[in-house]
Structure formats: structure tokens, C-alpha cells
Length: 316
Ligand SMILES: Cc1cc2nc3c(=O)[nH]c(=O)nc-3n(C[C@H](O)[C@H](O)[C@H](O)COP(=O)(O)O)c2cc1C
Image (cartoon, rainbow, N blue to C red):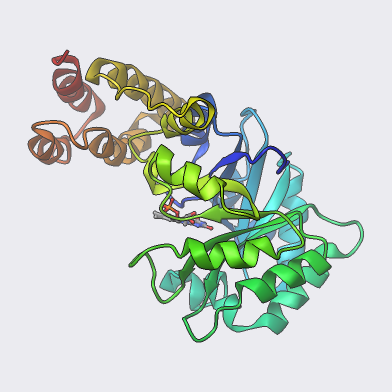
């Protein structure tokens, strides 16, 4: 799964849903990861939670990400999630958001290597579950544990570890420390996927050249730009930048995104979710600030569609 330095779409809560994953695949993502799904919610068969596990026949491979703290709950949830056909289960050990860490899950696990070991033990028990981990470099700069977690993960048979080299304390401030990541990746006994600030083809190409980096994950750079995968692949292949998309080409992608979203979530919820994507699609175009103000004042999809067609379609 991690040969040939694949490009992955990052797991992003509220963003990496089925429609967005499909778009990412269409533009060249080799692998996608779902939004994080609660392990508790899975084992309690909460319907909204289990809906997130449904891969809806999307082109594979997809990795399903779950979060939690209890080793047995994580194992049971992983087994249930595997029934939906993902290539593997990813365990979230990097989310720094309060709602997650207050229960000791996500990045809070990076403060407790013993708990991580128990989770890995549970996951590797036969019948083994194919799994990966997603971590940050550590809780804070005094506890940079990514190297230790990677060693443990390799010992317990993880397929790969994805590291976003910021500490949990940093949230999204500062910069991802790719020099640190390279140091631990070069010595790692399993594939290391790098995540963080890969928002341009050049940044992705530079990260790909670093020793030990087995795969790259694109996150925020794909917002309003799911074709970033195509741009990165073209740059890696030819060293050339693709010309920026014309607004009308963007409009065609926007329309496809809307079709996928409406089909998946229905018009009412789709509409609410779509406005943020439209705001991102408008980024950098003249008049975008006014467009965004109008966008968030609309109350229905037809209104939104008229505004969008006028904004993107009325340009050459
Ligand atoms: C809005 C948002 C939601 C995210 N949700 C998740 C998540 O559910 N699971 C996870 O492991 N990481 C999550 N992340 C982190 C990303 O997967 C990624 O590691 C991080 O954003 C750094 O990459 P980037 O600079 O390319 O965005 C999220 C990030 C953002 C900005």
C-alpha cells in the first residue's frame, strides 16, 4: 500500500467525507483516509457514527480512521470498521482538540506511551487487524516521542505511521518541522508518511526527496483545490507547473462536488456543508470577499447556485 511514495488525502473532520474523497481520488490521490470516527460510537452502533464507516462503493484504497483510548474498545471498533472494506484502520493519536483529548484520546495518548503499547498489543492480537497510526511529534517540545512511538508501532506490526511534525501544544501554529521528521523517518523500521504544510507542488517534491519519507499526505492545501493532487503529480513527473484553472473550469469541478455532496447527504445538509467549500473555491479571485459574505447570507441551494454561477461562470 505504501510502495511508490503514494499521495494521500489527509483525514480531516468535517472535510474528508465520501464526496471529497471521491474528488481527491479523481484528481490523483492514491489513498484516502476518512474523517475520524469515534470507537465508542462504533461499538454502541450509533447510526450517525456507523454511517461514517460506509465507504459507499468509492474507489479504494481507503483507510478508516478511528479514535479512542480503551484498547479493547479500539480493537472491537476496528474489527467492526473492517467489515466495511477499508484497506486498514488508522488510529488517531494526533488530534489536539479539547473534545478529544479530555477523554485521553487523540494526541493525549502521546503523553502515555504505556497506554499506546496496550493499544498496539490489542490491535496486533490474532486475528490481526491491518492498522496504521497517525501521530504528532509529541505532546510538547519537552516530550518529542514520535521516534519512540514509531519503534513501538513497528514492534507490534503496524503497517505504517503518519506523523504531522508539530506538537499537540502547537495546534496549527508555527511550521511543521520536516527536519525533525526526516531524522526519525530515516531511522524508522516501517514506512513513515509525512503530513504538514504540503500546500504546493514544490513543497511536496521537497518533502518527497527527504530520506525515509515513504508517502505524503495533503490536507489543508486541498481545500478549494482538490486538483492539488494532479498538480503535484505533474510537477513530480515533469518538473513543470500546470497552469492555474480558469474560473469556468473551477465551476465544472464545483458542480461535480455539489452533485456528489447532494447525492450523499441530501440537499438540505449538503447546502450547509457546501458553503465552506465554495468560500475556499473562491479564494484568490477578485471580489471573493464580497462573494463569501453573500454566500453565507443565502438560505437555500438555488440561491447559492445562482450566486456561484454568476461569480465563477461570468469570468473567462
Ligand atoms: C479542519 C481539520 C480537521 C482535521 N481532522 C483530522 C482528523 O479527523 N484526524 C486526523 O488524524 N487529523 C486531522 N487533521 C490533521 C490533518 O490530517 C493534517 O495532519 C494536518 O492538517 C497537517 O497537514 P496540512 O498542513 O496539510 O493540513 C485535521 C486538520 C484540520 C485542519
